Amino acid sequence: MWFTAPTWLFVAYPAAIPGIRAASTQFPKKGRPRFMDNQRLILFLALAAVLFLIFEAWQQDYGQVAQPVAQTEQIQSSAAPSPSVSTPADLPDAAPITNAEVPGAAPAMTATGSAERPILVETDVLKVEISPRGGTIASVWLLDYSVVPEKPEDKYRLFKPVPPNMLISQSGLLGDKSAGLPTHESLFQTAQPSYRMESSANQLDVVLTWKNEAGLEVTKTYRFSRGSYLIHATQTLSNGSDKAIAAREYTQLQRTPLNDPNEPRFVHTYTGGVYYSPEDKYKKVSFDDMTESPLDKSVSDGWIAMIQHYFMAAWIPPQGVQQTFYTNTLNNSRYIIGQYSPAVSVPAGASHTFEDRLFIGPKLQDQLATIAPGLDLAVDYGWLTVIAQPIFWVMTWIHALVGNWGWTIIILTILIKLAFYKLSETSYRSMANMRQLTPRLQALKDRYGDDKQRLNQAMMEMYKTEKINPLGGCLPILVQIPVFISLYWVLLDSVEMRQAPFMLWLDNLSAPDPYYILPLIMGVSMFVQQKLNPPPPDPMQEKIMMSLPFVFTVFFAFFPSGLVLYWTVNNLLSIAQQWHITRTIEKESAKKRR
Image (cartoon, rainbow, N blue to C red; front, top):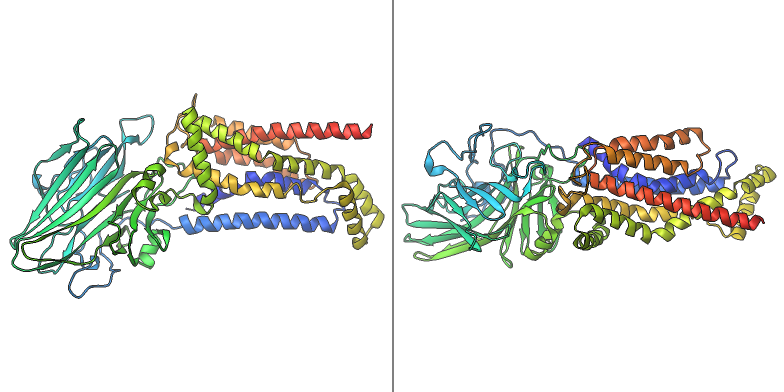
């Protein structure tokens, strides 16, 4: 989505403004020595390189274009067939789980009668609808999360069985076609139409069964636990036939591209498939990747998932078992990431149980880290995770003390400002000192004229005498840019801050300010900060710099208010710091002149 690219630029650019201002005001355009032109060129090249790397990372992670949703599906194979046992590539064409939804009506799984009505399951944190057709988990509501804070009774729906925003979990068994093992299209039976976890219970089992005339029986069990988004899933094959049966299980997630109208317009995060392996660690598989180069990879001790902003669903196989991870596409409109196990032989009269775990819920880092290796990497802070992760840890520590994410952001901003105080002080002092040298530099220019060699020698001697680094006002700013970008990702991608209230009219730090008050305050603070600095000598550059407060006010009006709160507080602290340092330098200069 093209309009998301400026997000990166607007995050990095405010941090770089002091450095750009330093480079533009150190020397007047007229008569500026070539040496300083080169230094200024180096600075702008460095800033351009930072912005280029940022944009490249964004393009790689989030640049795919959503495909239109079609109503018919044709499965495309990506897995190599086995001589004796079917693979997911041999599954029948996918059948729709439900009819089209009727606006205002509860979703019905099929129109074939009560035998296929969804099985309702409710725990303290989940409300689930399971289709008897394959035991597919077709709908999931997260009871601790609402769509918008104004309607707490309207719970967030993560799973949905039909487009748009379709997301479902399917599972089944594969074997010799003559065996007729149940897939996600087979009809299962259950003892009761609904299940509810009692207040005195810690677990809830939902059991579905399937039988055929050959004596095969499959029991599919979902075990829910109190306070947990982790579901233990088993498929038990009981072989009542007169011959051994070769079988493997598969589990997969299927979805369409996400279109969430409640997401801020200028904020875009990754939606798509991911997998984890000890070799590749955390690996994204975009919808384009699924279409152009389907996944087919053997993995032990890994997992597969579909992720989106704040939430995810992941199938986690047992440790130590070699799985095959795969992806499929259905007519370039529905995307599947899944896994299938090695084939096992179940003798006549015996049984075998396949075990997996299914996570459906928010990307809470402290919980994900305890479930499976690398699962917490689904909270993706980008290529600056090494900086962003400690920032998140500090924020959670502060929040545990103050209990409010708005005050947490303010306190964190103060701590970051204190951490970089000396660097910022060096920058402001260098800028002020260089401005004081401007008349002497102009005198050197007039003295040596076009003799660049002698001019540069005289300049270097003056710098040495005055103990001034020409780039002292620029380099400290460049060091801070990665921290600002990291903080941006922490504020953007941490579900802990979703719909977090602050105070007064700011009741949702993850959404734009509904009255645009905070962006206006931020714009005013930027304008005041501009006025504290002498205007650039280039008139065109001066016009550009003076227009920035207006431009940033407009764009930040669409950003989450938590981000705007950070920039506003950072601007106010910078104004106070710059005013204090400027006053100090003026007093020092006045003493020297006496």
